[in-house]
Length: 270
Image 1 (spheres, rainbow, N blue to C red):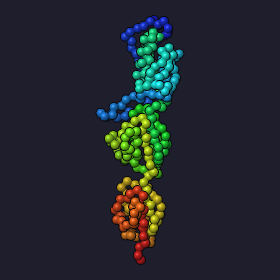
Image 2: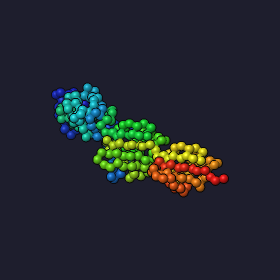
Image 3: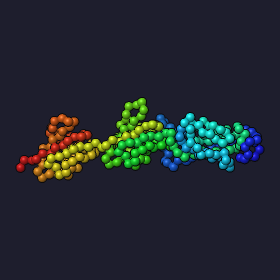
Image 4: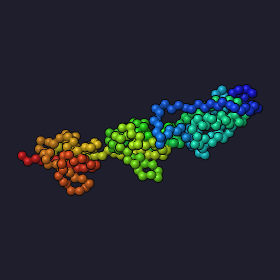
């Protein structure tokens, strides 16, 4: 038998050392947790693969996984790949090469050229909305960073939508603090949606009337400052608030601003 050479008519051999070389993803490793072990990317329909059998270029192939989760390899034919990672697939191909009598000790490498079957959707006020492939386990923070992060006009929270489950609201400040309990691992088919940032409206005797974003924990006094402060004819003691379409009411400057609040700064008495 010719080692690593020759196909039809090659002798069978047992006790083989089969090596599978995994493709390396140039991303930082995800910290392991007891409830969320990292696993390799599971192949599925439309993923693009490159199978290399060292020393036997005619036995390798560049292909895409079919809708039924299979690929067709030279010599060994149809191979079921759905649900396998690239290391498992490399091992399976090597075993089939050996059992079919084509190679004695094949060295097989499987690389994923395009990750298609497992992805998440990112929409709304992010720099680059779109589809992010799950080429490894990702948490919500990592996916948002891959899209260029939240735009200035985006909210300081994100909605996670997962089929069959209630919508989850994720606070961006908690995401960046690194608490994994507040930063869930994403699943194929998930959607992250960043809505428009919460805003308040202000007019009257103020130096810059208009619409402004609400910062976390913002008070009425801070809202007045963002709007340039009260004008020479205005009074911080005469500030009204309209909330939720209700009637105007007097408001304390320490009151926390809520979404779509309308602040009215009135004239002072001379």
